[in-house]
Length: 596
Image (tube, rainbow, N blue to C red; front, top):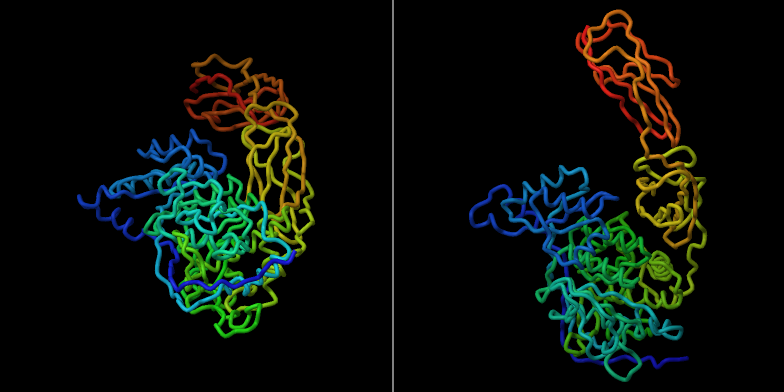
């Protein structure tokens, strides 16, 4: 069905806001070094990341040992637990000792001070009269195919007010600033972003978003001043993915944080696409989360001149604005571009022109991503991004890797349909005990790259890995005998390769005893004979070792007495026999004490 394509003339109200992250590391470290009575109680927020496989009970003990505890709600604790992290607050006077204590814990992977997010002003042009950003990305051509359906886009921002063209366009969200379910926008930034994605179109009022039949999931991570923390942004990403969003818009950026990087990786691992603004630095300085791997990063091109007659609005739009961040020579972190000077709706339902920044080019691309997802429901985040890259490649823009986004050209771009290959799994056969690494052997992928591996034991899911070589630790406690292990390996397009193996689990220690030896406590001379026996009901006995003063002296693989000269040992010494089964479990005999 052909839709009525229209331009909307709006009033000249300007609302130009864009968000960036500003680190608090400098003042936090200064407090550690020179703590005064005035600053000793200044709160410092710490993010503690734990190694894979560490359970919640261990994390609680780690925090308690450092004299810390979290005051976060259950929702916040469970959200950060998805990436093996916890958040605590400590006074600046105690932060250095707390960090040192945590970093000395073998279960802790990293400790970092949380960073703050703050906004800064950007250029705006109040003379912009038409919603030409839609023509620039060729959205009207795409609307002849779809206006979006069944796709939820998370707007991780200042909240969203469901007013005007966003009435009825939102689903339930969460507020991580106040830790509740009220996601009202008390700043205006998030509503303007959301309107560009999903403002209801073809309704004879207001404006049209790129994906006007899509739904918005409001996730509030910034307060009324446009300020928040990296950990709140990370929680927002994780919560949105856990609640079904597979396209996430982050119109914010700044210095990196490990907790934020892990949250983006969590989204990628769950086949979600993170769309991020490149930033408004006007230079090549990396901004985050935009510069993290597998993020679709958007720069801002200039608006169309008022007098341009090209209906696709390509004239003048293949040049980045002066404020847009961009790639340095040889860099590829800024992927595509869309118009950065737009018309959108504020939190009161007013339609404003001249709103500027990469904060507003990013949601245009998020809307295109939602259209592609509607057209190709099985596509992963990687598949959607690849389609957009392909569609943009015909309209090059200096400073970005691909070019100016083209919505209709991004439809029907084939995705990767070839599964990864692997020659096997290790271990496979033999005995196992304790915690063992399970790894794929000969793993390769021809196009999209490996995304993750999942470990199943006897058909039950256990854990996953998103890092090469994609091995996963299997704790064999509670298992016995023949045990099936399986790795399900996925590439970024969700193609799957399964490799299987079997191990015999034996965690039961053997029986070992000395059957003949001189009486303990006696004085020895000449040749000393030690006889022993051992048995094992699981894997069978493997070897016995004679221990002199706790150190290995001799080894037997059959039951044959140990002998040694009394003159070859210290004047006072102990004797034990340690038995090993074939799985590596051990038992020591009683300890005998002698002199010579």
